[in-house]
Image 1 (cartoon, rainbow, N blue to C red):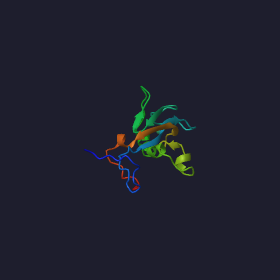
Image 2 (image 1 turned 30 degrees about the vertical axis):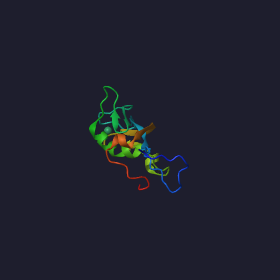
Image 3 (image 1 turned 90 degrees about the vertical axis):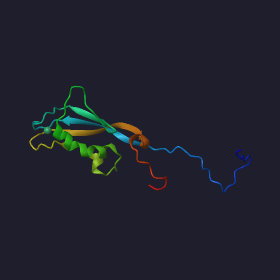
Image 4 (image 1 turned 180 degrees about the vertical axis):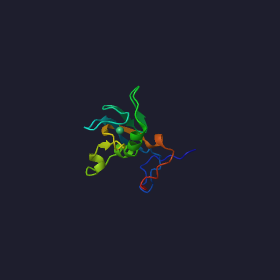
Length: 134
Ligand SMILES: [Zn+2]
């Protein structure tokens, strides 16, 4: 039979009841839209074409394509734009990315459109370190 203690807890005993750790984190949702310039576009992208990114998921409007090479150039920037950045960081202020084709006048504007909150345990199997060890 378990022993119960019905008086006030002694001060030298720690509460070892497991607690649910808050493992939430928030990322910006992004929209990447093709912007026209005064130079013609060479690639198969049109002004107004776009895709969105929420967490790890890219989404394209039904029936719209997006050329491979500009997408490949944009991909390394997107995780940084998803995360909060310092107000003085160029990653915060700069939003227009040039097309990697030097003959193409296309630009791609990355806009933070909102936020989504995720849980660490939902997106990885790697455990968080014990609290206080980050
Ligand atoms: Zn282009």
